[in-house]
Structures are given as C-alpha cells and as structure tokens.
Image (cartoon, rainbow, N blue to C red; front, side):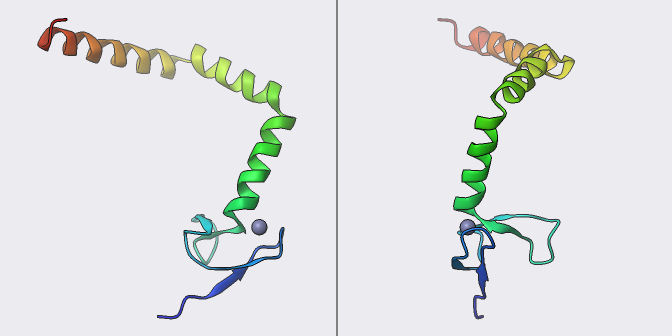
Length: 88
Ligand SMILES: [Zn+2]
C-alpha cells in the first residue's frame, strides 16, 4: 500500500500521511489532524503561553471539582490498601 503524503497548511511541509507525523483526529475524513505534529505542538505551547491565566484557572477549578475529589479519594484508598498488603 502506498503511503500518501499530506501538506501541512501551516508550515507547508509535505509529510507522509501517517500518525508518525500527524495526530489522530476523528473529525476529519483522513482521520488525521490537518496540521503536522510540530505545528500542533507549537500552537499548543503558544496557546498555553497566551492563556497562562486560563490554564492556571483550569487546573484550579479541576482541583476543586467533585471529580477530582473522588479521584483523590480513590487514590488515597488504593494507597491505604497497598500499605495494608505491604506494611512499611
Ligand atoms: Zn506543520
């Protein structure tokens, strides 16, 4: 099977259309993200930099959420269980 090449619209480089160069994206027809991994990574880092407050707030919100509390509780319980099996 021949591997098709795919041009990233951002850096305009041509890469083989594989998951090695592109992230998976179930919303596209090809199943691969439009931008190459390098550009996606840059975009994400750039976004994080420009949204430092948002990211910080997001983590803060998450740590105060019920979901996180349940997760923490489950984690602590499993640690307790482990300690019971292997007393230190
Ligand atoms: Zn690119």
